[in-house]
Length: 447
Image (cartoon, rainbow, N blue to C red; front, side, top):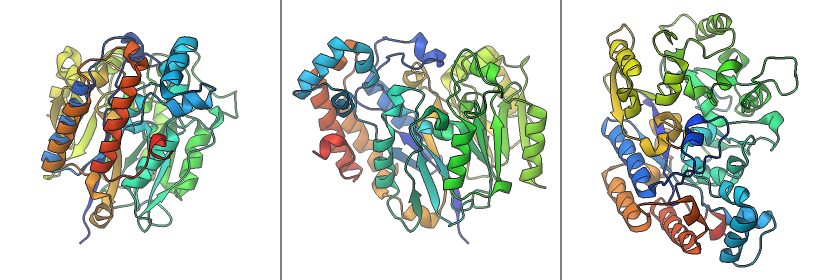
């Protein structure tokens, strides 16, 4: 009998992890702009979380970070000379552009791509489409390298199909798996793929947020579904509540998360919730479905945002029960910790909450779910994955030693213009590609 499961591929935090406060609409990111960061601590927090999930018996993978500062993009924008010349000129003449090209946001791998498992797709392969992230310049420079990393990780075309990211235009704004979830009875069965969008790009008469941008369009979601060969009857398109986007819920995974037959969401998450939930029930079919709604009087929207209650991971353990992987911020908030304590006593598959310290990520605007890309797969498909990108005891030790050798304990935004930091970062990434056996995925390796 073929074994099916969901693997989590977490983004490894890069050696230039910093707080630039670039993401308008992401309250946590803005509130911590220019604070000192600890790249070493951030990377180790992420590795510790990956190892803990692997120790729980889950399949855990590692995705390499982007190169930052992105000298290649700065050169495209007209800065020239040596790398040191480029850094100095950009930091001096266009500091906002320079900071954007130093962004650490690729650590949030939930935005890297949308993934459809082979059980859902027409050709029976796992499909990947890198997100174009057009709404924010600092993220729009990621897709090409993201595609390189994904192709080097899932590198067997018998099982994996890779697509180019959607056109670089706001009409097809695509933020990846942060606005996508999948419900199923079992990972190997055909599932219901849920695409959550913020606006209709080609119809201004439809509801849309007025304060903060809607980063995902329905047109982008529909394009990804077509590329992945999904059947209409196995897809639901849901509009996120525009009022919540204007309160700082910049992605759906800040207010809703799903796993197998569980959809965990806030009362205010969706526009026209009654219709949305009816459609989910109808398309999911006559199966055991748990729609867990958190009411506003139990947890306010602001508490949900500040603790990232819904930016948790829901994972299925070996005994069939589910656990919530939550940031320690949830434990420190009275309303949220009280709700989670009650949740595990209710008649749902969620029976446990495990707390992790990921404060370096939280301060930059992303919780545990932001750090990972979910890939439902078979044992045969896992065997086709680049084995060096899977977490185990040896790789955990190797990567921790790598971090100790190459990462700084503390980093300020001003440090990013230091040419020596670029040298340190490239040396680290070049060694990482050897550890993970990725080949030349970065522009500096392709010169």
